Structure formats: structure tokens, C-alpha cells
Length: 260
Image (cartoon, rainbow, N blue to C red):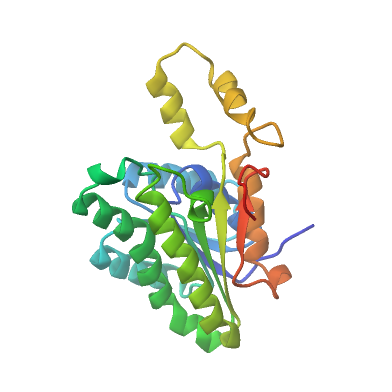
């Protein structure tokens, strides 16, 4: 199925690596102009070059710490200056922050909420008026299956992700009359840079391929998913083909999660 996004402009946060980079690459290859937002300029420039190899439109790299309100406002201004519009917003920035509840300080809670929840709120608020005026918009919140089925010691990530799922539903209801479609995509075990780092930290001598194979044994499909598979679903939701899909929370997890 060919997905065409020609004439659309997208913003992808956490766009320099992993799932964010895969989503940006897929959107750009489908014809969208794409702005990548991430904190590190060096990684951003490398990502911009990588996306540009298959892009059919413009690719913009904007250094931004989305957990900081002033950075979000500045970055939005740069995107508007560079691309002129935002039709598609993918809120992907985030980390997996976990721990025993009593050991999580107020500072850790606030940092997690700023990165995963308030960044999405602030960016959505900035792009919303123009989407409503044009009567076309797509907002995709990348969350985690823990938002639906949290486990012990899953805070603060599971809590901030659950709040993101509620935000998705609220925005979908408000956006529907304006053809602003809002959905969340929930990550299961997807091959990404965080697993590369975890493998390296183990220092076990095990190959990365064997490490992934071991994680995949508990997944009904028998393997870890790829970032490209995740990006394909995001690209569909960003397109006209998904014109009647809004307010959904879709797991991309090979049936790992016990809930739908």
C-alpha cells in the first residue's frame, strides 16, 4: 500500500535515533517535509543526513529540549520559519524511567512528566490553531504498553504514559469536529538504541543478535519488533488513509501485552 504525504509537514520529537528516526524517515520517504527535534546537535545532523537520503521533501533539524517550555516555543518558531506549517505532530521524545515507588523523588517525577506529558501538551497547543483553521491535522503520541498494563516498579514511566493516553482521548474528542485526528501508538519490545545500550551495559560477551533473540522468546510472535514496523503504523495514521481513525490506543507489540 503506497502512502502519499506530499504537501504535508511533520514534526517528530526524539527524532535523531531509534523509533523517532525511523518514523521521520518513513514520513519523509512518503513525501512529507519533516522537522526533527532532539537535544544533541551532532546526532541531529547525522539524522538529518540519514533521512535526507530517501526524502522527497525538505528535512529540517532543530535542537530542542522538549522538557523545557521556552525551548518548545523557540523550536516551533524555527519549524514554522523553515517549513511554514505543521500538519503532523509525532510526540515521541521520552526515556524509560523506572524504580521502586518510595525511591522516586519529586524531582524525578517532575522531570518525567515534563518530558513525556507536558512536552506533548505544549507542542499540541502550538500546532492546534493552524490545524483547526485548515481542517486537517494528525497528532500521534508514542507511548508504551505499560500505560495500559503497568507493572510494579514501573513508575514514573507508566504513570506519565497513562496520562498521555488520557490526553490522546481528550484531544481526539476536541479535534474531531476540526478533522484533527489524535491517536497513540504503544511500544512493546522494539529494537532501538536503548536496547543497544542495555546490551552493552551487561558486558556479558553475548552478541546483540542473541540478546534480542532472548528477549523475543516471551513474545507470542517469537521476536522483537523493528523500528521500521512501528514507523509503518505511524505513517498510516499520519495519512488520509486513516481518515476515520481517532481516539485509538494501538499496541505495536507482537501481542506481548495482556490487554488490547
